[in-house]
Length: 161
Ligand SMILES: [Zn+2]
Image 1 (cartoon, rainbow, N blue to C red):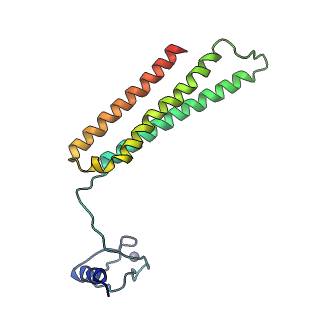
Image 2: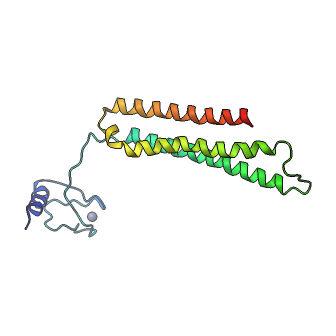
Image 3: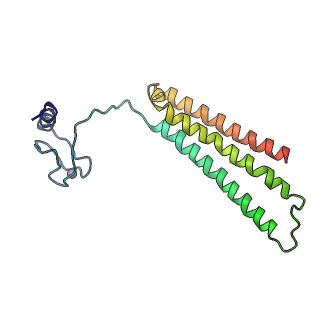
């Protein structure tokens, strides 16, 4: 029996521990499978200081922003196609150019929240080491910058078109 197996048994011998899959009380279980549901069990370290809420809030908000941008792009493409295939369509009618100019900008502005997701994933451990209040502040600040940059790109697009 390895030292890890001994630690596993000693841990379960020492007190109550719920199976992470079915919540069966594993106290004094000797096997590395849950006797109730058969799930494979392992002993690991956790930390109550790992708070994922600010990080997850940043990821989810950026993903929602990308979703909104893509909805705008889809509406733009559908409108453009409907305009082009109108019976009396003369490509490009006045006003059609706006869509042609706006679409790349709409796609480009979706890259801003995309960049935020990349940074949040790439530097997650750096963020998790900060105190929770600092984490919330950094995520909120980065979301304000992301929304401002997205709106700025769309504003420039409407001015250009
Ligand atoms: Zn179980």
